[in-house]
Length: 214
Image 1 (cartoon, rainbow, N blue to C red):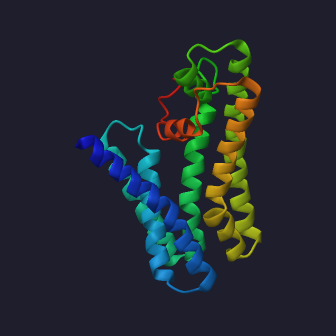
Image 2: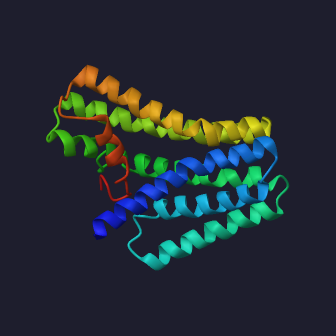
């Protein structure tokens, strides 16, 4: 029963992370329901902060971190000029800064690249060619996250709110899926692995914490 409850919670969280950005973008594009969009932004920020802090073993610290993010997002939304745009940048930034930190830290000397960790879980001991490949893929994900953050910043500063919102709220998920699928297709073509499935990559992505690869 606890396992089923956990799966339901994860499913609801994933559904929320998919639907909330679309609702936020629709409100920004039509200039209707901006109050509800702001509430969605605040809730999305807190949820992403909770996921990003999943490696913290002390629940009170996780709750405190989420509370800080929630209050900061709400304050920016309520008080900043064009607060809905400024505040809705926070969930996107938290998500990609967190992933970038995890992946980049796994590339430090003495640590194992996180993609190498994932590959060893599904393939066992890796030959030298795959070790090099998984390290390069870890770098590729770092560059992807950095490009997302830079693109969001530049569009927020220089593009219209609607264009920026399209990038972070509408294109974000398709770009992530394209990155996953493209890497999987390339890996299957170059290195084989008949036992691996695309869904394995998504499942393992949900297990990322800063402890992986330590």
